Image 1 (tube, helix red, strand yellow):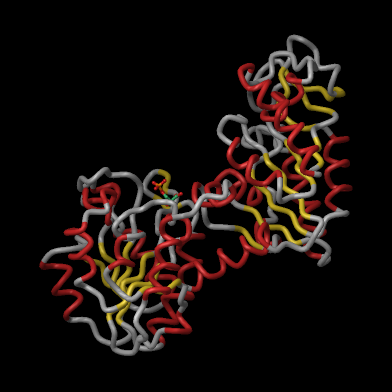
Image 2 (image 1 turned 90 degrees about the vertical axis):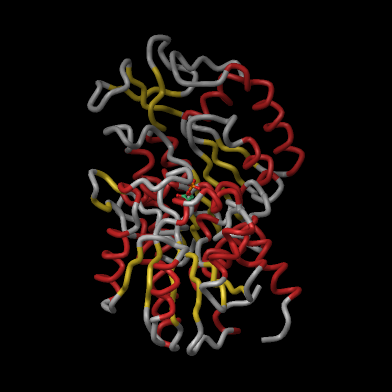
Length: 402
Ligand code: 3PG
């Protein structure tokens, strides 16, 4: 695909698809990462004299105008951060948007309202896409985290306008390719989370690519139970035992070593501060549940990370949102961060929970790369082609020289 290096945007109207879908609680933005990470692209384009028209979805209004899902507060935050006037318009198509675009000067930045206020966005409707396309001369996609959606502003626009990847998109794709496509070996993956059933495709895809797979979180309980090991009242999927056993066999055939927890922190109740104890796997009392990996597991994982060159991380080791069951996640995160800082390990992390866990451990900025993507990161780990990316690649192949 083409990047900003291939684009001369001076005096041109550039439709920039960002992912400004930031988390909000009680009307306040709780994390500005996605805003922060698109700023270099906005500043580069504006600095080169483009008229930058920012498009994004926000939340899931399902084709209706939902005032609480307006991008207005996000545009305000963006303005404060870029220290450059940012205009906002209450629709992404129609006369108001057209007039605002027509009155732009070189270097101006305009944010248009939530694209999902129109049903045509998610339907990837050609008429709606044409209306958006009419506002720009070029399309720059910087929304890796929305690239798993084949929507008008993430996929359709690339069929109507000369298309380019923004700097964040480039960075995400480079990091991901360094993680699994051509990684420094040995490469390992930490895969955690509640259920194998939601991570089956992911495990299937990475088994043949990584040398070591650490299966952690409640998912690990299913693997243990499948081997006939008692896990008490722990969360596990009884209908996935056969699948878990098949994964273990397949891993062996592919030369991938699966590492499971060797001890656990168990409690009788799932609540903050519940009395807990550490026990070895195989000795979990029948009336308790596993809520975190134990200290020996943490030690084992950190020691094994020391033998790797690359680590892909998706999913926490325990119920990290409730103390003290965040301990293993925090300690392994700090261990990985230390190895990364010493230049011994390249750590690439992504997925909603993982990023909050790393932030909670205070090490999100110490990893080699932390993706802004949740679902898109998972789909990429599953080996799926992301529509927002394949269309950029196709568009570049069929593009007329600029
Ligand atoms: C995300 O937050 O993962 C992206 O912005 C995509 O949002 P969506 O799941 O509502 O499509």
